Length: 112
Length: 114
Image (cartoon, rainbow over all chains, first blue to last red; front, side, top):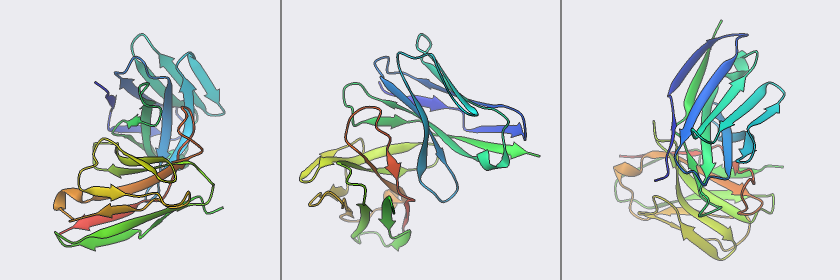
């Protein structure tokens, strides 16, 4: 079946790196996404990676994809208080380009 | 640009009442969708539309209706509200249904059914 799993909480110290992990089950997924949700707001697309890539870097964000293990991670370097949010992993289901399956979200909190 | 606008932001209903959640986008996007967000369950797709006059069901369509008479608007109707429909509802749009197209989300409607 189609499922995306994430841990619910992550706490890191300001200035450290944050690593948010995600596993998915659909081996035919073509695009995998990371969205950020700040309190009281909708989801904002942070980055996405195509399934034929292993890594994508965008400023402080690094996405790693391990297709063999169906594991996706988002690394945020030099974590700041403004990074506090819920981060959602999502995959596109190959059988329907319009269907995106979301994980339950990881709440990232920053310690001073 | 306003992006995706949802109204109302908050609503309380009694069981059995009906209402329409409004969603409008000003980006001329073909693709629009409705999700509900429940604690610990991520976002689940209710209905989606790939263009004016075309709608289809998502994962959890029961109890909801949609229509797409214009490119800009995609209202979600609750026919007879039930407590299980208490949730946060998000509307999203994208240029088209192609993979990799980023979805733009509204700020959500927080709906409570008593």
